[in-house]
Length: 201
Image (cartoon, rainbow, N blue to C red; front, top):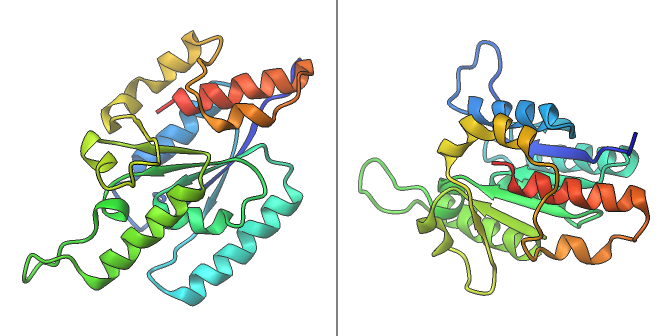
């Protein structure tokens, strides 16, 4: 059996017992990718806008990357992508909202300083990623024109499982991930898996 692609999914949000969140869609995405035959390992951290917690999480993520024999990192949210830098392997980042659009304050309706910092971090991460995914056309306008992005609406996640089962080969979307893979049968299978992963919402 050809080797499957191994993905480290890094996320700052994850549904946990006793801490209700609205991020169940991320867990569903991980489950759907596993159903499609992709080996997904989830690294969940809680930065809580605390630099020391991010530093601790970065150290842990880098340790995993050094010893986990992964083929790809998928960062959920721009701030999660920080943990994959400097890159060891190809990086895909999904931006989902305020990480790229900014945070509007409740009192005055203006963008918060923290939100502006988050936007700058997200753009920096996007500039270093091998592929960028956004969940709306509007979000593309918040990226520099030099950074291409694939738009995968959040609503498509509910159909991901069926789509993944039907797809036998990924279609080349022109992503630079394809340029550094060798021509061996094992690496061709991994390359196709990477492309299929990019196409799965």
